[in-house]
Image (cartoon, rainbow, N blue to C red):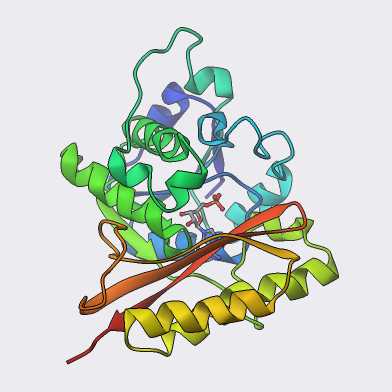
Length: 278
Ligand code: AMP
């Protein structure tokens, strides 16, 4: 089946066939992490739509919107190789009317942890994801656990706004040395990359502990050992559904999340762990 490239709503309607539709939203510069999302979508649906859109709304004024990697032709090759049915690639003007007024608010949960460092980011994410849902009308959508707070907020939006869409979370794909795959990794020099390994190393070390205090202390120690070239924004140990910091008595699944800048590249990563098991 020939891959269809859709630019707008009409193209999407024309491309629609019967059966279950899965959507994989991305900003392009596709790598193995995205491929694994596409494969999960393939197994679960009759038609797979991958959206490729660098969403201006989710970038702050000092962030890397203009230099975010755009590799559309290579992305199409990846989509063809993975048996994707439709690539939705709208222009910014197609997505956002110049006089638009209404957007989605991520609420308190969008203003904590990652949201505290990127004001408005999650509002921008939820707004574009809701628009993509309305345009593509998928039965299910696949998101990476790599962006754990984003995934939790999308689940929240689906629940709070009664969206008839199943959300699938997919595990983080890593390099053999532990570095989580990211479109931004291409900006890391060899030296930066060595420093960046502290993120996954800290998470792994923390996740081997059982109490919140130990998890935080052990992970922080690894981050500190990386030296001044690693500028940490936060290390957070949170409830996976609310992203509220857990207290010492918390028992059950938690997310240990980290964000740090190496050189000029900001990286995020997280792991899921069980605290105070009985
Ligand atoms: P983006 O890289 O921002 O275009 O993200 C598109 C989707 O891919 C999101 O749902 C991400 O969580 C997911 N994703 C990004 N990196 C990875 C990875 N290393 N493993 C699994 N999913 C990923």
